[in-house]
Image 1 (cartoon, rainbow, N blue to C red):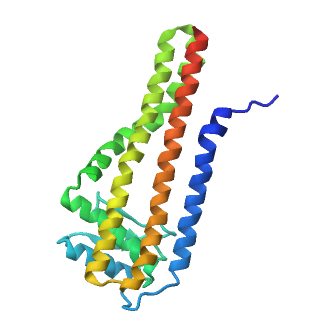
Image 2 (image 1 turned 180 degrees about the vertical axis):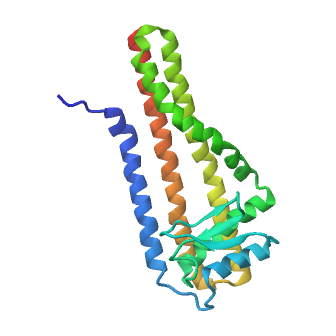
Image 3 (image 1 turned 90 degrees about the vertical axis):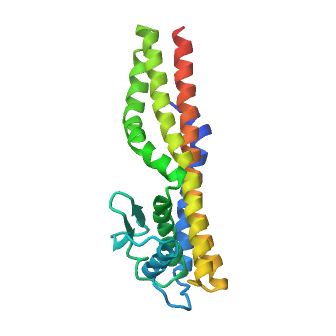
Length: 236
């Protein structure tokens, strides 16, 4: 006899599907607009440098990183790493991605509040993600031994909630980096006015992946809370 986890199917699965669709949309948007080349001919790496220069940030290096859309800013080394399909491309999609990462570097340089909060949450979230499921499983599995184990299960749910908080804080960080990127692109003339919209669509598609990640984490949290609550009630 097979066990069907209806809490997962009803609460989590629809948002997992939404997340997959969002990821596919990022890839399709990037592929589409990576074939649209800017008339100015500036590479994505140079565009990122221009965003940094406009904001008075001169100590950030730009390096290559292997992979597809593996672009990121590393605050530990103060380096923007741009992927194979971005770093030397002159496409509007690549320029949008590179300028977005430059936007993160500017956030750190300016002490932008949400990104400082996200950075502070990373070590706590890493610990919480490792402890959450073991505590929940141990708490539910041994709950018949005493109420203390129900509290252990709830502690696991609380640790998992840290991931939800992290995803929530990530949203304004990502949206703000894109706004900074598009403003710099427009103000400096990195792209012509009619080329900005494709870059915006690329970044908007990427932003939806963070919305989807938050939705999945939130629904997973509610599912775990429901499971632990039911287990606790059965024990009584």
